[in-house]
Image (cartoon, rainbow, N blue to C red; front, top):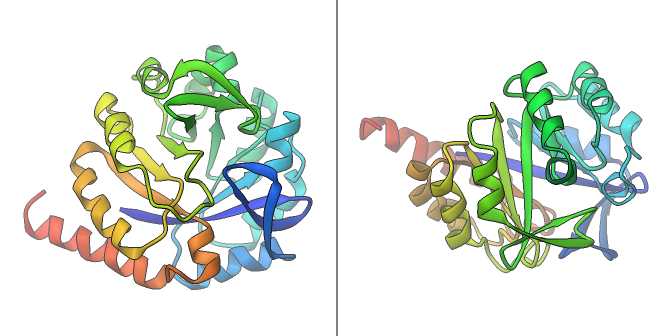
Length: 251
């Protein structure tokens, strides 16, 4: 289990939104590069970076800032928001980004996902953002008829690195992960799943151990890190303890 701090970018600042609403932001840093270095210094093995403006407009807004983040730290980053074509994917990966996250583009252009996975094996992540089981796109502003579980099934065998499943109604609210739906997504596919949305207590990271056998490999933590409800070093320690226990049990 890997604990992944989130850095959401809006107009050059590090923010957290409530339920993905662009008009409901909390600013936590004017220096996203410094924030990335901070999480690295606390033991983070990976960062989750989202271009919020890019997600809404459909094209990268913070590309230069994201590239600066990637070059300023030693740990890899996964990037989402406004990635809609192969040129952008290739540009990000060439600049030092570890993985690109496709959400809106995956729903509207399956061929793009297939071609990206072919060209860049295991460096493409599918982002499934859900509101009451339905998939949301365009920076979470539009909910479509597709069921999140059905979308996960559709991309089985494509060579994706992972699926990030986010419950929008919990995201940024510190109301707790949607364990039930996360488990359902993981049971639907053999693609590794990363949980996201609403993590509020260290006990939730402990509880995620129950979902590891189902294929849940990580969790993204945002607001609760910034408010101090969860200490990153402690969360990582707990995740490592669970890993050690699993090894002792022969899993």
